[in-house]
Amino acid sequence: MEKGVTLDRALDLSLHSPLSKRTETLLLEAGRGRILAKSLTSKVDDPRFDNSAMDGFAVMASDCVNSGAELTIVGTSQTGGQLPPRIISGEACRIMTGAPLPEGADAIAMVEETEVDGDKVTINGPARTGYIRKRAENLSIGQEALPAGTHLSSASIALAGTMGHGEVEVIKKPRIAILSTGDELVQPGTELEPGQIYESNSHALASLVESMGCEAVRHESANDSMDELRTTLDSLSDCDAILTSGGVSMGEWDLVRKIMEEEGNISFWRMKLRPGGPPLFGTWKGTPLFGLPGNPVSSLVVFHVLVAPWISQSLGYHSEMGPRLSQRVSVKLEEDISGAPGKLCLRRIRIRSENGQLLATTHTHQGSGNMHSMVAHNGLTLLPPDTDGKAGEVIDAIWII
Image (tube, rainbow, N blue to C red; front, side, top):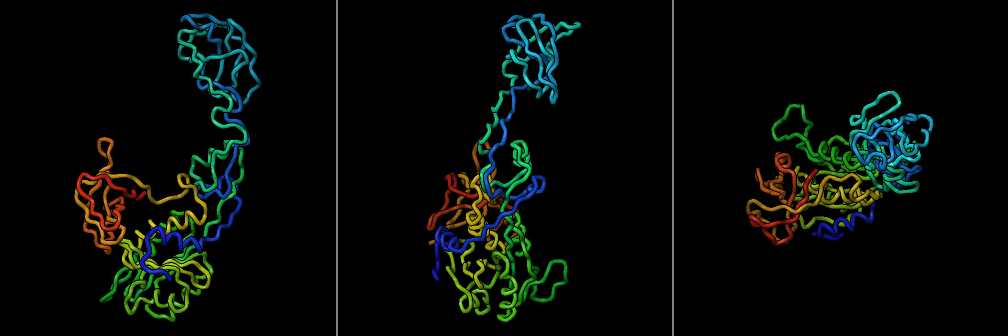
């Protein structure tokens, strides 16, 4: 077991016990929100043929150099209809948006800029070649447009359909168990007795787990009993991973740490991080287990900077198109922000844009038990160990999405 590791080292050690990656095939309409297991290439050219971007007339641009050109209408090109007739100089073909371009035509005149009299059309405006959508200008057959690890949004679902895919192979959602520990915890909505507090961490962690493309299996909180904790962990070990909250520090009743030391397998304990210093990672009966701090802010921060990247890298999520909870950015500080001796400092900040610059400031106190601070702020500093941030300085940060 390594103690007091850096964030990079913690991620490296945890990836020695990654999430198991399994796949399943779904109908396209059932794939929204899922993560592609295999990249998708286009089965067709898009567009399949040269077509019009406007309702109007397909013409030869050389016939329409001067306004007022009169052309003979020789047919109509409609979407889904028969191929239109070829045109020659002096002729025009009615055309609908998306309809095939007649052979011989190289420009489109907008219907608003024409006048029709019988089988004659007068072109009063310019005939534009730019109103033609060229075959395969978006995608060509065999081109990869959706890489493995892509989160299937409504737009990417539409693109998969455009490419001709009726089914998608996706990553089967890993089941991640979530367990808070502590005698003092009761569920929100019940009456509090003296010394009790409402349990909120498991609800927040479940939301984050779902946001990362996994299935959250939230368990009721466990009391401070080694026997109860052992029984509960055993019951959760059929999940793909376990997240606990609380019980990982150095106190007498930090039972997650104790039971993992005595009966589990710990890779690391404690991180050079503020907030969020006490986490541990190991395996329980072969199941990866993150022991997160009980302080609400610390629990969420560690998920953002450690657990989410572990999920992403375990399952091969695409770095830009896959699920993610934060974005690394550079921000200009509007005030001094103190760092942490020997630790990466993740101060909560509110990031806003002004005159093309991302600015950051703090709005509440930074206590690790202050969950309101995670709502009042939308980012975290990445102040290196032993480094303070000065007003006017540009620093690295993560913008929580």
